[in-house]
Image (cartoon, rainbow, N blue to C red; front, side, top):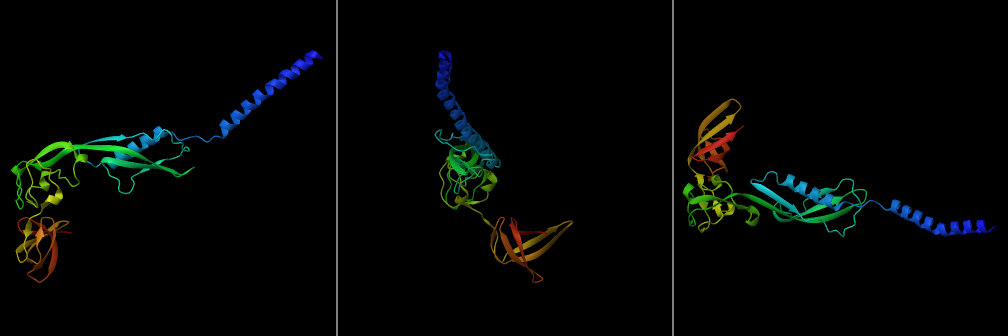
Length: 240
């Protein structure tokens, strides 16, 4: 009898331990999986690599890790995106969102460096000066530290006119230059029409002014009004 009582007492003492263990296992099983925050950082980095593929030079991308205090439900397919007003280089922000099973959105800070050559003045330029090959040179640096619209190809500067005066070594922006007119209104021009297997040249009179690459209207000797792309030498190109 005493032995039976001891066995029953031991079982009663073990019941709370078994009950707590079972409760802990049940709670653990019911807890939904949490999102790996390191994976979100990698998704954002890969997204920026794709977005900056077309940029010239060497691109260095550094995405800051997500706040470790975030407690996000695991996502089957997180998607990175560029928020409105986001930049492809410099200090920027990348969004990562989840659609299912639990929707959420976070934003990660990033720094994107673009190391490439760009055009600067090789000598001081005066306003109204036409830029020649000896007036510019190339240097290498981080484009993300420069204003938007910096010229990276010398062909974008040579033959154009400076809108403002520029000091020695100044980076040249596109809005600091203007194209020179290659066609003047009333000027005699040659209209070159090109298509598959043919090229026709006719004489015409320009009805509008035009810089290199601009669309200009002209009137042929037969009275027909045509539109073509202005080229140096008084030429209008029409491609069919």
